[in-house]
Image (cartoon, rainbow, N blue to C red; front, top):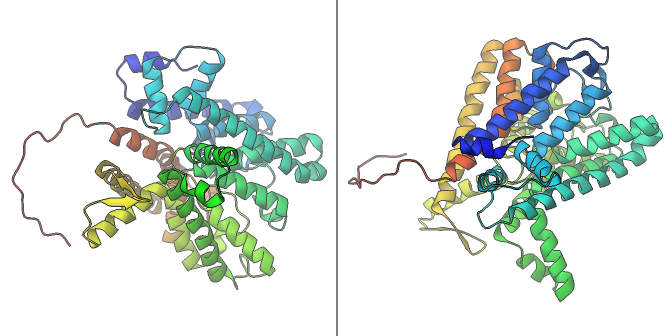
Length: 460
């Protein structure tokens, strides 16, 4: 169990501790996956393959170089599932859960670290929030597993069907996109309403963020007790929840319409499906691109227009304080607001009658810029070491950086250098935004105490 007090006593900031916890977990997971009991044939797995698998599990990405259902034994798959669960909730949250279970007291440093790992305000009741997160996660995954079992147990038998149901539920909620069904992800179930609907709901719930969860539950309870109308209840949601819900719904249904139009006659994706099948699979594609990684259509068959939209959706990702990756919905929206306020010459950015702080606007710009820069550099490097079409290389890197896990058939064919680049991309995608938020949320060590006269700089 991690001793936060020893870490914080050494004056290590969350900017260092959080990525270090992910890295340590990845290394331990990789070592366990190399051992013979983790592979289906009982032999050692080479360290790079194990490292890639451990990274994609902890970073809840889903890109794999060997088939999860075929290469790994039950124990190997169990290790992967534990890594996915730890990666989805975060190592600090999991360690904090162990501290709660063992009734260990939380020091001030422990509380600050937990606060930074969830990117919460100082006024939040951290231990109560953590308890609700853990309970909510396990209850949601449990319900998902039960619903999945109605399909998988009749097909695979009790033991295997139950294992597939549990694995899929955890993977979907954590937005990992890994499965132990077969080599085609969920392509064989794209006409199965139970599997499709349960998977989409788990992905969306994991991607909304825990803060939004609890706000919605609080408002529903309040509306029930005080007999509020639905409109009044919606108005009582926090500005953050309203923004997340509005932007998320816009992306989901906007993406569905785009994919429906661009892939309507594409026989490689949804062209041969019925109208209902086209609607459901377009909706699924729109949802899974936002860091989930499950697929019901081959990504290499997407049209150029759909591929371009995919880059954007994977880069945006889910919402803050959840299991999803990407730069996050709120971050991107604040960037749009910044441009809008400049064009309209407005002094302040206001959303739902609430002012957005200058620090939040600067943070959003910094996160998006650094993420774009990292994506560009990694794409160039991948193209240099693996001569592949640029659209495939960019798709692979954006998918890795956004912890999505979708691929245009490139992952398994990567050479050693290519795999290392994708490992770095996945790690940066999972820890980079978290570390940047933790870093930018703290005051800088040096401030501009000297006031300089205005310079003349020509922009644009």
